[in-house]
Length: 258
Image 1 (cartoon, helix red, strand yellow):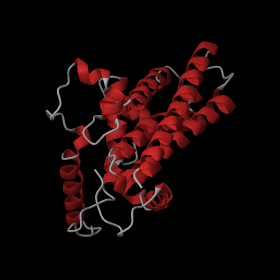
Image 2 (cartoon, rainbow, N blue to C red; image 1 turned 90 degrees about the vertical axis):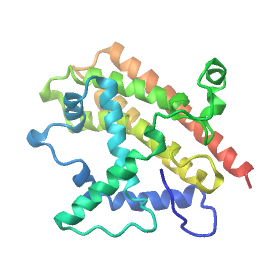
Image 3 (cartoon, rainbow, N blue to C red; image 1 turned 135 degrees about the vertical axis):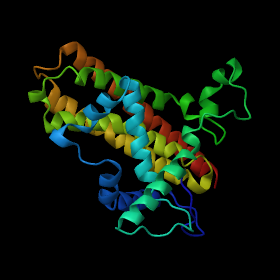
């Protein structure tokens, strides 16, 4: 997904994190282009649900949009700067979607490996390799399942209870899978492993933020039962810890490559 040669040195996670944070600061115009404001102040997650066949489809649509935005900030060396006129926007849109369709993450083509039972048994090792598939990455699958469950619950909430804190909670839950996917797209070569780590750390931050909002703002509210609260808390707490372990494994792989 990401390519480019920033300098002759291999960046660590901190250099990548600084670079990615700067990219996020520049993304407001592009985000509005890809994800225009919805009329009637409809939350983004609700709009995606309305346009999707089910909750998992909405989760995947969210991840796809997020990756589109991030992909656009890593153009090839020959890509021209986009102007503000209509012709520039058309070229920009062509670049976004043509490049996005070529992204390995969304291709469903046969690879060199047999997808039989043997590879399922080796899925953890297989996932953490350039020949692997994110579909076998445990934390990614867990994040999608949790996000779908949260969306299913969110659909039942009355509009008057959809507060900024509520929307921030749902948004952070959705971003976890998107950030994991963004990190995974860097691959596992040491040249870009720091980017994988830095991006995956954003998933950790999102899970921490969601957990804080759940405990501080949603707990005890009239629209979440004790059973729902404890389920979300348990799943989110466990996912947050698993992401932390995964990051440590990536760090070990980075430092072992020295």
